[in-house]
Length: 509
Image (cartoon, rainbow, N blue to C red):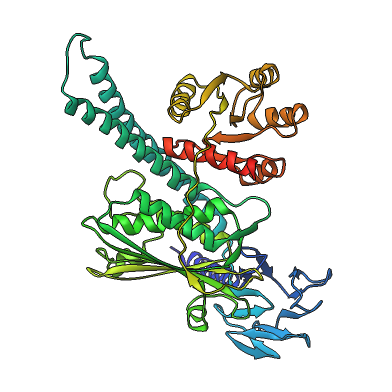
């Protein structure tokens, strides 16, 4: 290489370093908590923050002044934040400031919002997109593998039962074992799909107020009915904990944490769940606004615990210590995503051989909790009268299996294969059906479309929707139109029976 070429390389290297340094100097503001949580803003020469229309970062918060503060780039290249004589002040790392130089990693509190001053990497989105695509590929492969294994088990058991000569009597034990295998495979598939939905689903539209206390009670009751009796469950739940969020996702978060605790105690143990108003010490552990009241949910087990490496990777998608277990690696990843989407924060503490504790903190709405209690859930009695139920589903096997559950519950059932057929049968049947179990996703006319037309014929038409996929925004719309309940496929017979009882009870009240 000539001296001239060498000089050119040196100059090019110098210019590359300059470009890299320039990239590193670029900055952004990331909203960690508040109504704009997750939003990112590039900071060039100046970025204004406030409630007014002229602010570049508009925070819809009565605690924020119309023009609250600004971040600007000083002539020396440093970024400076300045409070613009706001009513409630600007905090940097918990300290009130008038004007202060920012360093990367500083946390800025303005009203009920928490913001992070951070590096901006132009390649970040590309890297994140590539990782998302890789994750989708791994997810698809894993799901196909797991479902194929489950279907193989179901098919083998069914083939065994179907292959029995009609004149041959087989011991009851063998038959029970075959049905038990089918049941186990179905349960595993149900759990896997639940975890997949919890991981993949994002909150759409506006959140509604959710009674977190009631949701915790429900999750505890479900765990007590389904977990092995070797696991003792204790609960201490304050009343009146109201949060803004998606009820289905929050329920998924609670159940995933409790299932994780169960799986950590294969030989039995104790599971504790508590829900209360967070104190200042608990808030100090999380990047949350201390001026806003929060609820803290704690799920604690006496299981095998986690070492430091496992604890650090606990929320990574597809990371699991459960080997090839169906759905492994998705539960805690879903918990993390749900907590983040609800402006919450989750921490984990664990000691190998002694157990694990998860804490999730959520911002509260205005309601304040009352004294702790764990009342027993009142049992709902089945109506004494025999009901006539119209069951609508385009899948033959689903209609037959659901029909058996309905008849076993002491009711009569009539069937429709489509939304259009359901409308015709409902109109022609006298007296009219007491309840309609309506599939949501059907070809031609969907369940929600059939419901809209059914309400025109009979504004009091009692309908419970059944579906394998759920849309929170659609659920809110249908409840507003008078839908009495929702059942997600796949479901257990008891779930469908409970939905029928609850729907008829709600209609009678």
